[in-house]
Image (cartoon, rainbow, N blue to C red; front, side, top):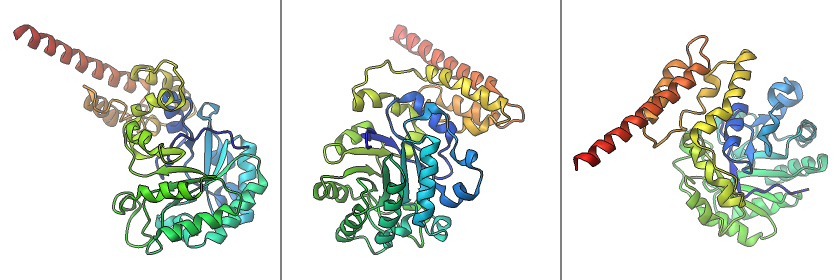
Length: 339
């Protein structure tokens, strides 16, 4: 049942993760586990299922993240998601946003471990694919290690074997989701200690991880690492994931090859009535820290949202990067000659 490699995964981000971004990230790594943005149980049961559930087979391995707190509804959604072809079902018990709390899902559920247990148990009973939970190390003043230990211990009774733990607590009142990613201090040792005290579980650590070196360090203590915002701001970081974490020696694509691999997807998206900006927002960080990066970002930012914008915008951005790179080379050659 549980044969997904979780050594490295990319966190779902509210209002950012979507099909286009997952397709883009998959070009960098064949093995990293990707997630959908959180989808509420109500949206799946009562809403437009293809809109919420469709994905490109190239995105696999892909987990769907669900939001909800009714065991029967979540079991129904898990069953539908399995039929749709997802590799894993994940329950969100970590998002601190007001709109999530008002629906009684996300981080506020940490206060009700028995309910989380019942939700996970119902989901596990409904499907044959893995079911995981993503949580924090605590909420508000319920933030001691003993309380985290109790939460894991109770939820484990459901049969859940996969815990993704964001190593910060969440303040449910007074901090925005952005502030909750930055202000509460990181406590990696607590996540390590959960793995130490529950060795039978798969424990994946999340929060503040920005390099693959940091990921390798954490893997001394836990089973997997989930990287978040950095994968969106600097996606080329992922190009080394398969070699470093999965011993897959396939050739690493260049940035230009990454874009070439995305062009047919963009063309199909545009042909189906989509807008270039819906995809181009995900590729702005591709040339981060590379000569010409600002020309890449500027060209796309200024032109992708013009009515009728197409792949020619991406081609112009590539040309701007290459022109700047050539200038830099010529400057270095001249400096070498002058010295």
